[in-house]
Amino acid sequence: MQMNTEKNTAAQQSQLKTIIKALDSKRAEDIQLIGIRDLTIVADYFVIANGTSNTHTKALADEVEFQLKEQGVEPLRVEGYSGASWIILDYGDIVVHVFYKETREFYNLEKLWRDGEFISAENYLEEE
Image (tube, rainbow, N blue to C red; front, side):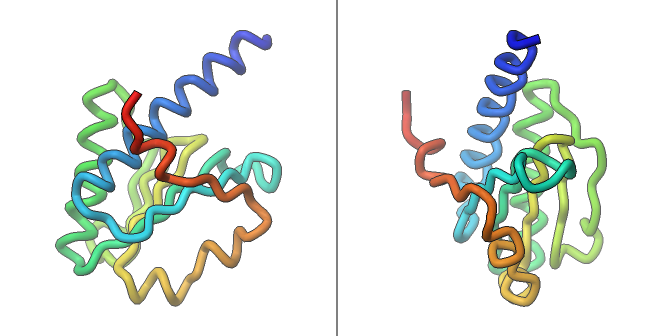
């Protein structure tokens, strides 16, 4: 059973790196990674970022979806794409929240999940 956990962790880390690099490549603002495994069964990680317009928000979500699809990973569901003020890409144990800036400020998920483990997104942008 331990090997399965390690495999999942390695897969998660790879997916997180892909997600964060995809967001960064399209100039997402304020990329946050929060470990929530110990707080909820909803997911293990939330990735939160925002765009500067609805078009930018859609482009960010599209890039994440494209990059993970290249690795054979499809979202379980996508919510909010048509409105583009808050797009959720649900990958099971990783949920990506891409906001329009004002919507992000309004919902303030970082405050809501402040008991989570805040992990520097910069760690995932460094080259090996």
